[in-house]
Image 1 (cartoon, one colour):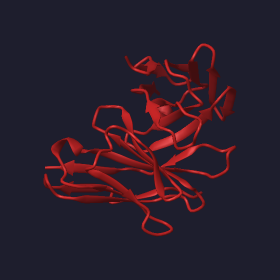
Image 2 (cartoon, rainbow over the protein chains, first blue to last red; image 1 turned 45 degrees about the horizontal axis):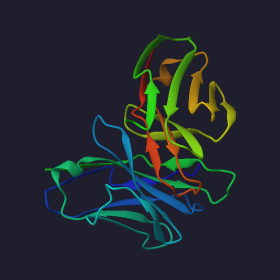
Image 3 (cartoon, one colour; image 1 turned 45 degrees about the vertical axis):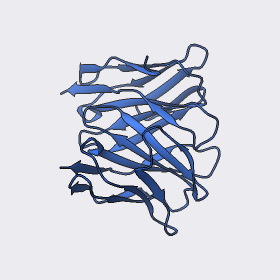
Image 4 (cartoon, chains in turn purple, blue; image 1 turned 90 degrees about the vertical axis):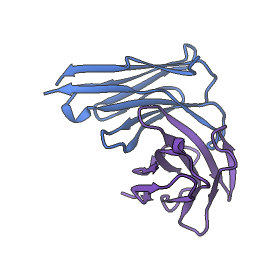
Length: 115
Length: 111
């Protein structure tokens, strides 16, 4: 069964550094999402992406964040100048183009640790 | 005020018991998702509902739009069902609209 993949599984970085989290959505999916879960807290929506542009973003998704689909397969989340509070699990998800099937498929997540 | 409330927060039950997890929401929605988060952190989408009832194996999800309430039921529960179950709602009618998550219900099934 096709699945969403994410790399790396764990990223450790120093405060102030830039990180890029990578996702490979399911190949025929057209809608892409990033979510964040700080340890012990609920999952939070960051951004949705469709047709090569951001569709919606939350208040969390400020100028520090950006997303890109650099080629036909990858979907990336860039975090500039990381802060300690950016430490979290970051999940990518994608969903099918068929209007009748709206299930989002989640990747396994990337655990980001900012030191 | 939380827009998505789940109850209970924690639930421990014996293997074989019938499990019910509840979700109430305060906003107008176009879709409600039930997700399962494994102890390792991975998230699996179980159901997406906009009305009525859906069944998949031992899992049943129902939604009452008028009452702004959904339930997830697990029949013949098994220790492998132990996970956090998360309710999430989408407010807008577009697939790319923001999703709001509940805090989750931690389920532990004892053998």
